Length: 119
Image 1 (tube, rainbow, N blue to C red):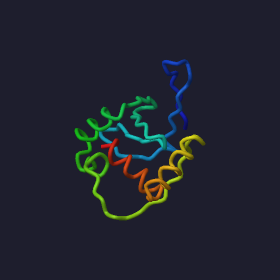
Image 2: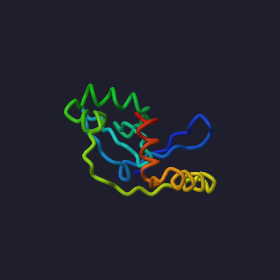
Image 3: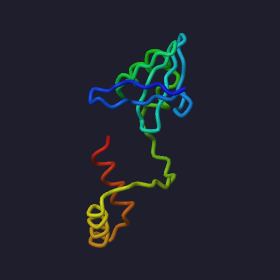
């Protein structure tokens, strides 16, 4: 069942536990993560959206056994994963030129940016 909450911009925000990933439950309150990465709690047909840090604190308090898997340090296993992204045409051209100039693959450049700017 989909739940809708009117956001501060006037748009309705959708929360569907059937489409979201179930993360865990404590005392009748269920935590879900949407495909967009948004978290929400569901209890007695009531939805409560959570910011990332709020979800992190909730998991640490009520589901400590799942905390490391969801929010703990990210280990580099060396495994590669394909990711499909959509970027502007101008960014794609800049990425291609940077790859040619540095003699690195576009993947190496993107991974370098992720490692530098996303801790």
